[in-house]
Image (tube, rainbow, N blue to C red):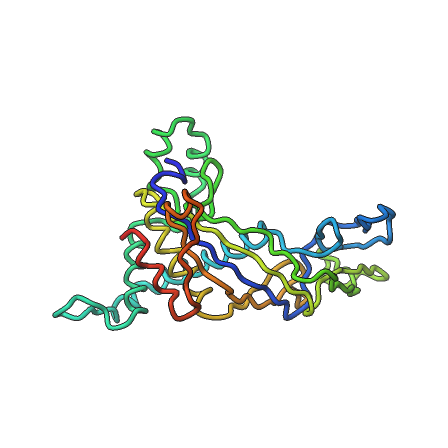
Length: 295
């Protein structure tokens, strides 16, 4: 069982992120800020943002992957919780067997998957899978791997989805500092004379990023194609999406708007011959990706 088994192609989504509030994606605590030009320490920051070598901030792909993993998990859990109630309203036409709306069809497809596949992998199976040395042994327990882990990966199983770093669109960084009072977590109160500053990017800072997803016809991965299409691709392609990214969210940080720029599908032929992909007009033609997915 390999993520490269029975590959049909790959999907790419390019997008931009615009902060709506102060965003802090940290580089650790008490780190000296050093310019790449002089390599001379400029100042100390209690909680600096992570930066490129030229001192411009960026959003790491790992942070974005964690954000979308949590988002997709919440959506799957919500669908599972409301499945019985929503299924009562899903009635295809008796004459054609076709659902009246695309939304009804999407719900039906997702509920069919949730009925036969776990959402998360339990700890025991996770340990078994990560310790299995043979492909045969992994295949024997693969049906117990959750949908989330099939898409985003786990120990011993490569991720189908890749989140590239979201890079700044301008040469000049837009960073500012805010000062806060430290909180004593044991007493739930402010610590006297204990202040710290937090760096963050402002609403003037824009980023562009890319998501890549591998489409596979392997029986193990087939359900993930529908999860990706309904819960990641279509929500991103239809409209702007509000996200919360980075730390200090309890202080009101992290709100941003993610806007799709382009969606593209690379077939095996496109990939092998280095040809241009099929692109999808946003949002009107986004649903056409479904015709490339295995049923």
